[in-house]
Amino acid sequence: MLTRSAAHYGDRTALVDGDVELSYAELNARANALARGLLERGYVRGDAVAMQLQNSWQFVATFFAFAKIGVVAMPLNLLLSPSDIAYQLADSGVRGVITEDVFLGVMGPALAEAEGGMVTEVIVTGQAPTDVAGIPAVSYDAVFSADRSSVEVIVEDRDILHCLYTSGTTSRPKGVVTSHVAVQIALLGSALGLGLKPDVKASVMPIALPLFHVTALDALLLPSLAVGTTVVLLRGFDPAAVARTFSTHTVTHLTMLPMMWAALLAQPELADGDTDSLITGLYAMAPMPAELLARVRAQFPNAAIILGSGQTETTPASELQWEGHQGVKDDSWGPATVSTDVAIMGSDGSLLPAGEEGEIVYRTPQLMEGYWNNKDANTEAFANGWFHGGDIGYLDEDAVVWFTDRAKDIIKSGGENVSSVEVERVLLGHPAVAEVAVVGTRDDHWGEAVTAYVVLSAEVEGEEIQAWSRERLAGFKAPKSVVVIESLPKTATGKVQKNLMRK
Image 1 (tube, rainbow, N blue to C red):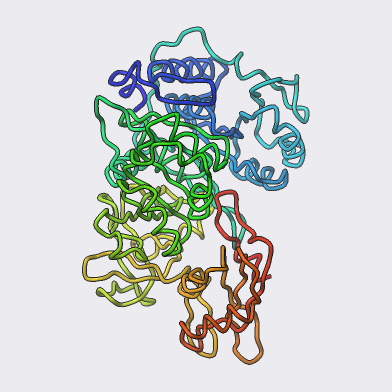
Image 2 (image 1 turned 60 degrees about the vertical axis):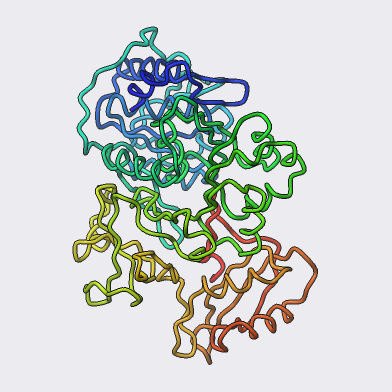
């Protein structure tokens, strides 16, 4: 893919990483040089290598270097503890690790705890020591070959491109292995849904979400680079930095979490930029309150502000709202993307008609090949010939997907099923509620009591919010208690860890 993009968009800027700007031709040349250097060091098709890298040109060049020679990329969540990393290194059996010198304080203990596993060397960007936890280390720059010409290695369509570990909110993280062709099909669907297309003038997309996550990698970065977009890499979310990109670039596409959109709107610097240039604004991972959605659309009047959904296993995006759904089906997930078939399955394995609620299931060539080293999980995930993502919802008459809740987050209270998402959506309408997570807590009378944990933007008592919710929800759905807390526990990608809240 990068070879083709370099041929079509050679001198066009592919990446902006701080003061570094790389053209498509230069990015491809660096990926070739690194790929050749890895081959010279003995890496072969099918080897796996962990990547502990921030959003940077090194991440992108490394990812494509691996792809060119059939090496499996395993990006690591940068917020993982040494024990979490040790588990993933041992479980995946990676041969090497590429890390930054700033992360050696974490990677060293991880390698020591994993007792090295199968890791034979550590490649370090920045200042490289001679070894890490007794494993030989080498400088990242020293791995590059002087030969920057195209590298030719046989790589089959269904060879594994990357292994991404799930967030592990309910059990040990599972390694999701996905093929080259699955990602290629997924990125084309995302490009179409986001309105990314080849043209003589480049689209511009800042990426503040972490590239170690499937959303930023497969649904944002790769679709962008397939069609000649200029990607502005941000080392984490800084709302002021995102705001400045609207002054320094003609930003056409932007994807963030709802809370990130809210923080962006609060930046005075945004007034100095060209917000009329935005074509598509995507939000994901959580619902956006109606009031915030209205403010985002007012700030970016020429943009479609839409929701996208998907899972690591289905290689997002799986569902994307259409521009025409704005103001009509804002609370939906939108229709399936062009290469994805979505259905609703009952508990007996039968497919349900429109309007009936059940588990959301998928058939698509962009599915994962399976979970690494986890036969039981694969059997469960692909029961009855469809992939089961663990979400509950229904299809309407237009085949638009409406999400009810995660199966494990449905609250069973007093013999009734309560959608935590529905309650959260109502509570987010309260002017003093900034964030909320609703879970079921053990209760002798109700079985599970609907409990809301809220982060406030203004002083208000939990009892007032509770009374407010009773006016807008059925009695059995209204929270039995509202607990005010400073912040919600979240993963690195902003997903609320409801398992911790239940504990």
